[in-house]
Length: 103
Image (cartoon, rainbow, N blue to C red; front, side, top):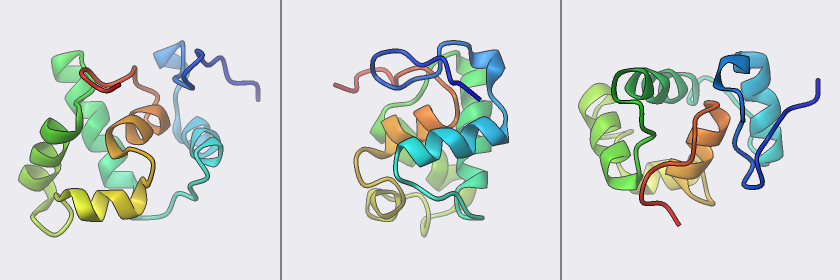
């Protein structure tokens, strides 16, 4: 399946997203999705559905800490899953637009 991505690798049509697309997007990020990623993907998608914005790093960490606990909701853990940039890579994989305030 060909993905319609913008110049920064974000999905152009948010409605085209599903978990198969997420796996393809993750592959482009050199990430192999496993059970650790699913709650993060669904959490950020729910956040976007409510706020219509992808969270930058600090709000993302707060969101994850609040929903999933201190062990997962910290930047060090998130950097192990998303080494380039947790906010940007998670948004890309979740089929969301570029997070606000991310360069």
